[in-house]
Structures are given as structure tokens and as C-alpha cells.
Image 1 (tube, rainbow, N blue to C red):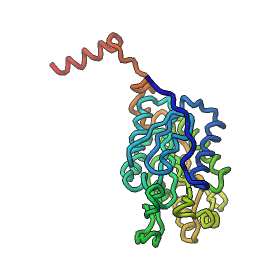
Image 2 (cartoon, helix red, strand yellow):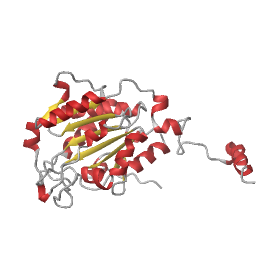
Image 3 (cartoon, rainbow, N blue to C red):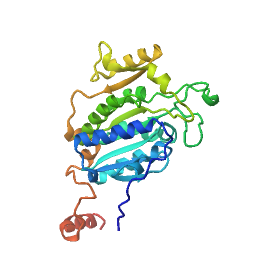
Image 4 (cartoon, rainbow, N blue to C red):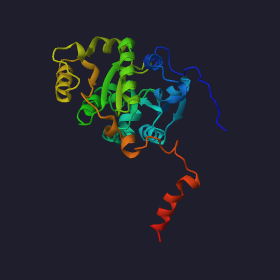
Length: 290
């Protein structure tokens, strides 16, 4: 028996940056006309990881740091689904770092949303992998997920948004969802999402964000050029946002993981597993064991 669980009221603090992403995700899905039953949201651990509880769609609460592995599993089981993984910087860039790195190389057609607030908000404001030097005694330089994503030469979609600019965020999410639904591969969007309780950076980030599309020479199809532009923007004390990489051309028939492994595009969830249709295959398998 499958129970139809309805969305609950958000448990986030008033003013949390995650509300911006929640609203933009709803708008993007509505703009594309994606039916709710075709959407699956795999949530991580932490404040942001509960986002699937606030949406009327299929949801799954993943293990700490393992949401990408579980999201890829959902996509492989049924490639017809639009699969979104959503979590925070602590979940994704600490215990989940191994899966984060390999997700780009695997290139499954899922959308990964990371709500980066540069702290562990749910456990009361400790330093996270993206925290600035000096925050809560942090002595390590912050991890930059976008620079890392751009360094992996695979035709992925890479972007960064800011919760203080919902219009741009919605436009980016629409493009990222289209990329996935067309089976072009992995889409990664990091949202700068301030924690108003333990690390309220709204005012600071609003003054620092720089949309790369507004700079001369911007070309999101040129990975190397965008990487250099990001570095220059960071040196100037700004935070680069916008679409960082958009492949010039993608062959959906060969680029995405699920199409390479499942040429029939059905996936185990939709495959015929009855005895008679598979009798010949079973006999061949058993014959090989003789």
C-alpha cells in the first residue's frame, strides 16, 4: 500500500534563504508544465534537506551525504522521471563530497540543488566546508563548488544563483530542468541561501554577487574562459553567479548515464519481469552456469 502524504508547513526559520529556492522551484516546474507524478525530489540531511516535505510531489529522505547516489538510483530505475536532489553545503561538500565529485563524471540526468549558507544551520551554526576563514573559529579556506564543477571536463550544466534574486533563480532552474528532461545529463545549481539565524549574509551577498552574463566576453559554452572569469571575479571581492557552463552541443543518445546503461530507456521499474517474456534470457543465463 502506498500512502499519499500531503505537504506539511515549512519548519524553516522566517526569512531563511531556502524559501527563495522553494518558491523558484515551484515556479519553474509550473512554467514547464511538469506533472507532479513525474517529479521525484530526493532530500538530504539538514534544514534544506527537508524541502521535499513541503512540496506536493514524490519525495525521498536520503541518508546523510548519500542523496546523489539515491537520486541516481531513482533515475536508473525509471528514466522517465524528472529527478531532483536537494541538500545543503554541509551534506553535499563534507560527508557527500565523494558522490559530488563522481556525479559530474557519471552524468546521470538529474538536477542537484545545493542550498549553501556557509554553516551547519540545523546543528546550531558550526563551520561548514564553505565557511569563511574566521567564522566560528574556522581556519581553512572555503571550498568553491562551482570552480570544482568547471574543472571536470564533462558536458554538464553548471550554475549558481542567489536567493535574493528569485527572478534570475527561476530562469536558471527552468533551464536546468529542461536540460534534465531532455536527457542531456547532470545539472548542478548552487544557491547562495543565507541562514538568517546563524549566518545572515543577505546584505553582504547582495552587495557582492556578480552575474557573469553582464560581463564582457561571457560565453558559457567555453568552460576555460568561464573558469578564468570566475577567478577574476573572486579576486575582485565579488561572488560569481549565473549560468557558468552550458554545453554547446550534447548528444542525448550517448551522453547521459541512464541512456548508456539502459538503451531501451525503460529502466527496471518499467521493465517486464514475468517468466514467459524472459524465458529465453533465463535459459541463456542458466546455460552459462552449467
